[in-house]
Image (cartoon, rainbow, N blue to C red):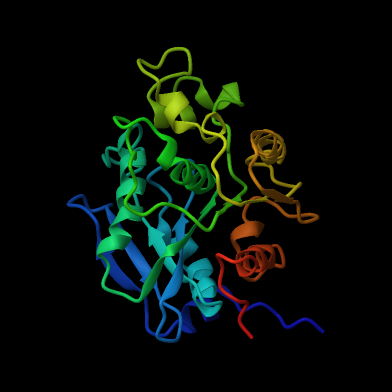
Length: 279
């Protein structure tokens, strides 16, 4: 019989010591939490990026249980907050992207036993879009937000229920809609090349292994977004695993209590760049 996954509350209680809090800039949103696994390390790192349509209403709080579970499986989880759209945070292009880049690069300054040769990115929903973009940073032009990373994503990206092509759904980049607010305009109306720089499907190949985990019952981000991205990424030469857990919805894939989350743990545990699965 398969053991029951821990509850969200238990996932937090089981993390000892509690996460360390760090800042990577002067803005209150430029902060992150480091969840360390047991042992002396050095530990591989999973950069975790929460979603919420890039809006201020959602925060890194909801990814804490997932970070706790990653730490139990041997990964140092770096739960990054960033400026989002609304509530006077100043998010959107380019601030949100610059914050994600700065948050990842701050790992080079963290006093902890981290193996920065093994850094993965994991994002849910809008965070999945940002995780894929973070992996694309080495290929950005030198004057683009996030170019020339100090800490590149090397161990792959797990994009969970990700809007991986922000130009694919016109309803979302209509004036006032989430992508419009993030990017400050439509693909045709933006004043520069920001969509070419900030849309992951336009940055292929990413050059790292990809897990696209997307529930077919997702009513927030259609599963076809990940299907189409998988096709494009494979055609570009990337290694892609597309997993569609039966019956899974939008939130299911980020919940450590659900079986869909086990796909993330399994994927992270395999391969030469990754840590062996916990016993």
